[in-house]
Length: 264
Image: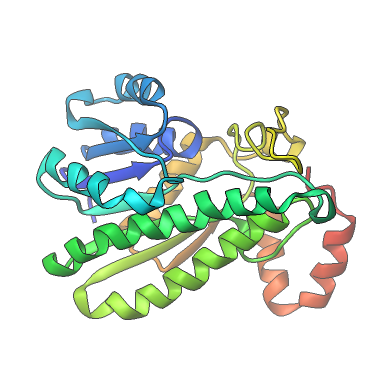
């Protein structure tokens, strides 16, 4: 599948992976809708795109998940149709479960899970009526194996896998694709913006994130997986990919290893 003239909606596009996806999609000739809460940052991303005239900015707040039908209507009107929705928006966590207030757990799920599935459900009737469409969901390696300091974040990403695996089976008859993308460490602001136990931002970059894949490289690999319509792909360093396979075949061993490794 070529992305040329495809209409792709990317959430969480003001920075990090979403920003890199928008820029790479523009290079490949796609027509793009970029969304996040910060319109000013989205406009800056648009200016970086190869074909800014084919990029539309649409404000989106995933936390306002009960009112996303109107946003979907606006998105469809921008180019007249939508081919691919990339659910990339979300927030991370860096705190022990014992130190994390339940309101922080709720906030993480509100954005990562409820916001994502609400947007998906809002556009699903449109895809079903057209008998085509593609949902792409950026989850995480911790959707496959939970690690310390990320209990609620991991839970929200596990939940997305459960929802979208079920959805894939339901919409197969309507020619709708579902691709789950599991990043390992990617050098973005995800750890800087991550919530700590009291709900404030961590405001520092983790060592693992600092040494992670460049978002531009990640975006290219991710788009290749989307073009191939893969069901699921893990994109990360050797250690993260190895850990996923260890979890599958040797869960007890990886559980012992996770207790000892530095995940910051």
